[in-house]
Image (tube, rainbow, N blue to C red; front, side, top):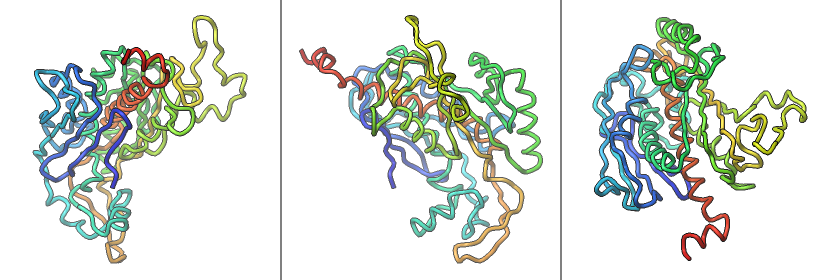
Length: 358
């Protein structure tokens, strides 16, 4: 099982939903980066469960501890280990599905791949693991802040109710991180209606990266858009991603889709800030599509580990819309990709190498 992401700025995660703890090890962080632990905690607080009626009732504090790689507030250049202890597991909620597969979950595929599975909340396949990605992403964002790069996110759509205005300044005021306050009530209503019906809804997060330098990404096998897509598709529940004009670009003519260039820069941004797999200096815009939460409280047909048919009736505490907290995870993964690409990009020209070593 692969648990490492990145090439220069890398991270690996560990732990399970109902284990003792989850955490990550971030490697490749340049020495001398100021590590603001309160900022890392703030990022985790944005993702943590149990904050309102639009999220799961699982009440985890998500208090992060730095175990290594930091001395007197600065990175030492050695691996930074972060740990978050689980506090509010209710493993007995899963005893009735010990031997049956939950529809829409990874239970079936994990069992057939590995021959066993942790049925307590999905174990390693649980979205609980994404807290560790947010912790790692916070360190990446600290580095990007020093380089003037800004990464942010918000909810574009819930249950097909789409934002018409993108106000990132409003996101942190919203309980569901919506970008359009005029759509918030309808989006909230859709979530609560699904929750009250023991069902769930899907949603779309918008991630924006600003002040990106030109030249990030490789022309062929490590393209910036390809790695961003890999990072987003690796998040629990994500089923699609758009970059720039995305799906709609297939409906356009080249004369419409091409971003014309003047002395002041690109006149449009259909490309989403990436051309030929390499950043062009414009904003990187990503839409990340989350499926409805598969953990719902409507009885559904399934089979057990012996392929005998059963009726699956779930217990537990689950998000009625994973896109909301998932938007924070998508933002974190984007930051990790950009941080990695910036370190990789330093060696693309001999003049850059000479600046460091001459």
